Figure 1: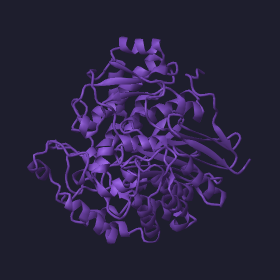
Figure 2: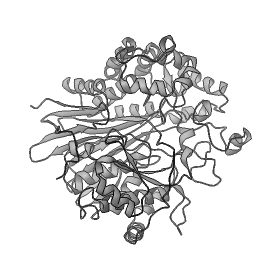
Figure 3: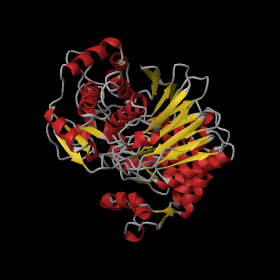
Figure 4: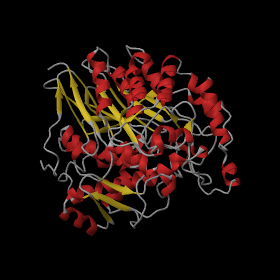
Length: 548
């Protein structure tokens, strides 16, 4: 197997439990919970809270979250926390403000945050420790301040002007009027107070005093929230995972409003086709990239001749796309050379997210992903709470007449977040993982699954393999841009040349510049050991716990 300049570091191996994330303090929080006898749910909840402190630009109480829970001899269950825009937010309201698209920051970009609702539901599904116990390390970290990382400092510098315009955010992220230095403690005392309160009364974020403060903040910024939509967001989305067969395996994904179906659709198009091609060969990358483009075509405009005008954050139209007839039609189109119209675009992929995976010695696994949408979300903090609000509505909802994702009250905007689990024919866990990365997520997750299932890659090889991304995806701010194929240079000059010859407008990225922060934990049934790895593109750490 080619190694593609993957760092010479193997997967972490553990005979007990395992945790992995994109930040050392987050991983450590999960490991300590497992060491104390907690299970995968407990570990994931502790890691999520520590993420809010350690990675404040990527996630928070003001964002969204989705998770899959695997337990031996039980169905894989999905937990979703995604909120509504304002009850007064009809298309005419925004057009009356002279807008052609929703803003990406400020009050008009915000949807009610669903992350806490999802985590509370996950906790009820089998946690063994209270939220107060699980969140205590994060509360202490917020009070004392974790050392500022290079990534957080870079995020603050990039968005300095927007953060400075919000007094509450500026007080936290621009102490003394300047970005914190690397290693300087970044304390968040208001967030610590809020976490301590919500650990005991989590419903207060949706129907109590915290909800009232958040709604008043948004109303003062011109957003037509009533508070009712905020309360409605406090009910999490819980359902069985959605699935597709891939060879002898079953891939489980998160349902709407996530784009989990897009990963499954790509899997249905790739099954048998990527395994028969050399790993990451020009022909394999070409097929995989065009399969991703089909998924985005179905999401954005619908397949030519199809009844659907696209897929939004609700409805059942996606199910037809995973049926045999639809997959065979699109596979035939791929075989005949179908491709989108490739061009060029100066815009970067946007978005910022983080995630965790936790596995316990009893075989339970949680794969969880959460986000503020763009970095620091709407760049708006609820005063006195430490809670940054997301910009999911601005990022995800459209001002396009009749589109399934057209902005409307009580309609969740489409999402980028998704997470996956793989089981074998007997229903046993094989792999679990996820990756941040905006519209890259559905593409990179499909690539990870092929590396693992088609080519036998271990977790370290899978997360470190060269990455490629079609652009644009479905974010509201890049709709209509010409297509291009972005490739890490490690794919090699011959492959990049051949992809151009096949008709792709190839844009070469730095060797490790493709984006994302993939996490994978696998279970080797011969030895009974977990294997895991975190993406070398970020600061990820994987730790095994117990069992030698």
